[in-house]
Image (cartoon, rainbow, N blue to C red; front, top):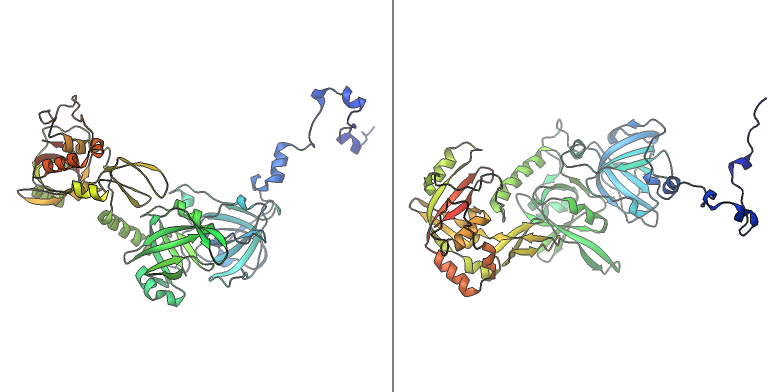
Length: 505
């Protein structure tokens, strides 16, 4: 005998009117409050993007340049070179995505604006079922962008987008960084690429210019009152430069978060069709709807600029940290006594990565302690690519509001000399203990054995210098001027600097 199919009533619990006898008779531990949906089902309904993407059909991975218009199941990978989240009334974000072969406009219809944190240079993966022709953004045509698609993540199970957060130097972080119009077989250079100086002078008149710059500094987020829109706008100023010129790139509103991940003197930007406007005697750059920004592009010109920036940073760097771990903390008497000429000869004829240590017996020929104290630059540090000066051992970075520990500015020593030559004090890199020995080792600790590691030879720290008054500082400066000291040093081939390990009186 076949089992009868269960009725629909068997799938639902009996509803009992509130306050009835039947409800009171049911044990409380058997009652199931709620509407019958599980917490996971509720989360999927309220936040569709939390559900893992499991495509139910086959998608063809295809470069953007080979996409065909019409209904096709395509999987597209690329990087965001521009975007806009100003389409709030329509309920979608507009992204411009490139993969080195072409560009496509992607409309993302969202449930909540906060579902996506868009950044320039992010790697994205798109699954779509239809490719249309050029898109009308309401502002005009976008160069190299002849295709468009629309996505409905969470609504339509056939379209989706994943925004990747790649770890630095990972495989995902290194791919898809070839700029548009660059083909090794066709060009030895990128068409339309010009120096920053050429663009700021007359190149912006062409309307198709490209500039390749490095980030110098990232300023704090600011709020600006817009007179045209009668609104308060967020803005951040990014200092950019190349080997010819430097200027300011202004990012507004939705572009502001992109600058947080940019590293001064490391991040390279290839900007196509940047906006140009004059502010008094200064010239600022901006990003328009038809601009494209490639973050850390991969092509020969960008590699050349990275090398050039490293060379420029060595010459223009304000703060050089002491290379910890390069040498031990012991300063024995067995070190060889060099002259400045001997050190130069050793550096010129040694191997590129060779390091050595020794001692120098020099005279402090010039002191600028009081000069830097009056300027408020006795101590220094570098944070967010911006020099930080103070006459105290700690200071607050104006950009990231972080508390930073400062070090004595090497420029308080003008120069040192011996019988063979002279050297600028600003080129030396000092250990903090060496500063303490210089300032306070020649007075109370003069008779202390330098090689005695058990003794506490740093009875006073250099931080005590910041607590002294002008008369005491002037007395220390006069004591150090024309003094003869022995400097224990180590040559750092990486920094190409002399690092002072200790001071003997």
